[in-house]
Amino acid sequence: MLDENLIATLEQSLRQTRNAQNRLVARLREAESEVDHLRLEIGALENSAAQTEKAIDSLLVTMRSGNRPMSLGKTISIENAGNEEIPQRAGRRDGSITYINQNRGIPSISNNTEPISNRFSDRTITQACTLLLREAGGPLHVNELYNLLVAGGMKFKGNNPTISVAVSLSRNRRFRKVDPGTFDLVMREAIQAAS
Image (tube, rainbow, N blue to C red; front, side, top):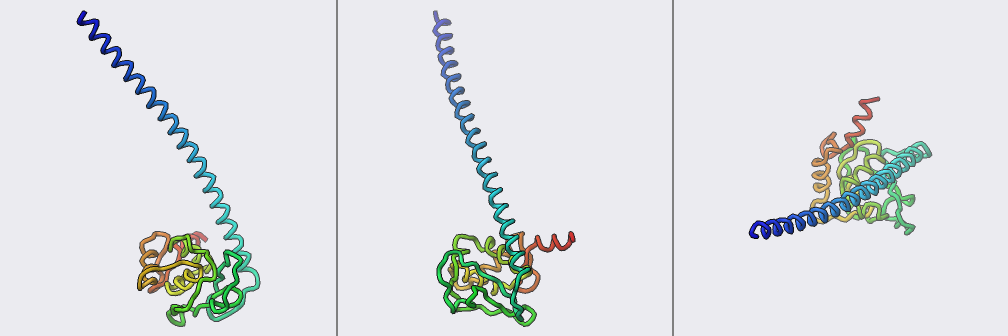
C-alpha cells in the first residue's frame, strides 16, 4: 500500500512537471516567433535606412555638381525640414552658411545663430556630425560643426558646447582628428586609400 501511494504521488509530480515543461515550451515557441518577427522588422528598417542614405548621397552629389557659388570659405546648406520661413539673420537668404576657410584661422562661434530648421533636434551629436561631414566633403572644425548643429535645431546644455562636440567625436571611432579641433570621417580616409 505504501508503494502504491508513493508511486501515485510520484506520477502526479511527474504530470505536473511535464505540464509545466509543455507550458514553457509553448512560451518559448511564442518568444522565438516574436524574435523572428522583430528580426524581419529590423531588416525592413535597415533596408529603408540604407535606401534613405543612398538617396541623401545621391542628392548631395547632384547638389555638388550643380551651380555652387564660389567663395573663400566653405558653404554648407542647412535643410529647412519644415516649410517655415527662414529668418534672414540666420545665415544667408538661401539657407546656407559660409565659414572662414580653415587655413585662414580658427572659425569663430556665432553667438547669435538661430535654428533655421529642426533637422538635428532628434539626433545625437555624432549622428548629426556624420551627416555634416558627409555634406562638407572634408574635415570641419568643432566651431563650424557647433554653428551648423545650432542652425539645424540642436539644443546644447552647459557652458562649453564645443567641448561637448569635440569629446563626442573623440570618443567615437567613426571620426578622426586631423588638426587641433578639426575632425573628419574615418570612412573618407578608407575610401581615399582604396582609390
